Structure formats: structure tokens, C-alpha cells
Length: 345
Ligand SMILES: C[S@@+](CC[C@H](N)C(=O)[O-])C[C@H]1O[C@@H](n2cnc3c(N)ncnc32)[C@H](O)[C@@H]1O
Image (cartoon, rainbow, N blue to C red; front, side, top):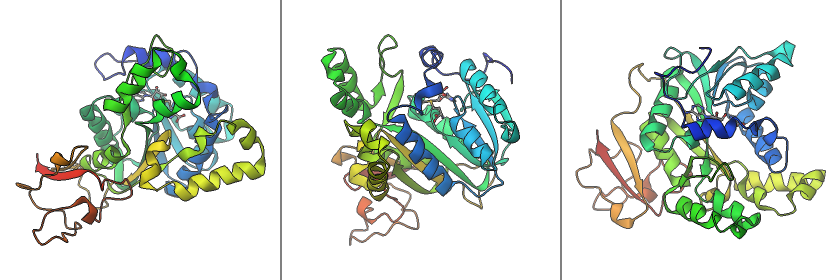
């Protein structure tokens, strides 16, 4: 596909315009972007299947991670909806003639021009936080599920519900009276809306506990949710500490040792979810008709009428109620304070 096709889904115009300003080319080489990049690479190296493997980098931007993976022996295909990113990714790939990307195309994460079961890993390091409704995010996740081979790996990144508020605090953004309403809305419902191109563009900021249920509903299993920057991005003297090799290693070690701690996940700017398409998945399935519903209100706790707990749920209460605490599959996303119920489609 060489250009935008009007019949295909596309991101909102303000998102395309925001990235059309060219900010992504340098972002991961500057300031706290260096921590994001270091940790993302560390986690990709830990969770991607071994080389040689086919990786689809959906929303791959200007190709930072794609070209790095190609250098490491992966066959990498990049897809992004922003024409400038596609152009910059082509230039980045051409600059390493010995390890070029296998393909670069313009496209949207909700409709991939790939057949079912063709790739070993899908990266979604961007699209999920620009899809503001749960249905759009599920469309995106189900499309990733479809193109993955059985047993394939999904690696997806979202922005924390608390990121804009913490960023505002550390970087004095609340000095602008227009900032607080943006941050408070983010805290309330995750619906982030930038302002005249100042501040980050239209996005959805995930509560850490929402991520794993979304992957589950799309059919992924064996999930884990990890902090990318952890609390490291909040350091006011980050630049000075990062420049010192010993202090840098201390930051990284703190982040590693707390990366899976549920009570700290929301303090990270970005969260990474890793999931697997089950090895026995059939081509047309994708989810098993059940949804894990998570709510923030204790009244959401409801087990009546449920089709029955999944096999791995331990019902330790005498009334047989499914309690989040007893869910062996719940991973580390920390839903212990939230209600859980099962529903049929
Ligand atoms: C912050 S950038 C991240 C780029 C790159 N993955 C990285 O981690 O450096 C977010 C990316 O998501 C892409 N994106 C936004 N909406 C998308 C959609 N609906 N489908 C695919 N990509 C999308 C943007 O074009 C942009 O390149």
C-alpha cells in the first residue's frame, strides 16, 4: 500500500497532524526518551522470540526499534499511518544497507494487509494509546491476534493514566491554567485531549488494571504487564544522573526490580504488556466469548449469572464466589482492589 486509502480506518486528523510536525525523529535520543528507549530495548530483547523471526512493528513510527531489531537478525516489517514517519523510516532503513527493513508501508493497526498466522511477533508500541474507545483497541488487538502464528508474541505499550499529572507536577506544567483541566480529565476517564498542538495529542491513558483484561478479551494469554520507565522518569536531575554511568545503572536497577510491582505500575510513564496467542488457537477464534470486566467501584463486583470461572480461578471462599485475589491468571497488573465478573457475548 503506497498511500492512505479512504476506505480504511485512519487515526484522527489531529493525531496525524501532531506527528506530521516531525517530533518523533529525535524523541528517543533526548532527555527521558533515553530511559524509555533503553528499557524498551531491554524488554524487547527479553520477550521477543529468538532470531530469525518475523516481526511486524505496527505504529513503528520513524523506525527506531525496527532498525535496531533488523540489526539483530529479525525480519522486520514496519507499518505506520503517518506519511512523514513512513518516509523517515525508509531513510533510516536505507542508512543501514546490511540490515534493511523487510518492508515499510503506510497503514492503520485496525486493518493490516497481512494474512492470518503469518508473523512470529507483533509490536504495538503506539497505536493502542491513540485508539480512544475500548472497541477500537479491541479491533486493533484482534487484528494483531489474527496475523500472529499460534504461539506468537504480542508486545504492546500504553501510557499510564497518571502520566500527564505526574509530568505536570515534575515539569511545572500546571503553571499554565489550561493544563489542570486536561490532567484532571485524564485522571477521571483517561480521555486525553491536547490543546492547539501544545501538549500531547488525542490519546487514551490506561489505568494499569485495564490492560490485561483488554488483551484477554482479544484472545491473548500468559500476559504480564511491566513498567517501562518506572519512577525513573520523575527524577528532576535525570539528565545529570543518566550521564553518570554508575548513577544510570542504579536508576535502571531500581526500575528493573520494581517493574512488575502492581502498586507502582501507574507511576511509570509507559507500560508494556506481553501476551501470547495460544498455540492451539484456531484461525477464526480470538477470544473465547468471555470478557474479564474490571471496574473501579466495589459495586462492580458481581458473580451471579456468570458462565463459570475459568479453570485456573481458585475459588477459595465457601460460597464459591470468584474473588480477584483468588484469580491465578490475573498476572501482575494488580486488580485486587477491583471488581471482576464474567459475561457471555
Ligand atoms: C509515540 S509514537 C511511537 C512510535 C514508535 N513505535 C516508538 O515507540 O518510538 C506513536 C505511533 O503510533 C502511530 N499510530 C497512531 N495511531 C495509529 C493507528 N491507528 N494505527 C497504527 N499506528 C498508529 C503514530 O503514527 C506514531 O508513529
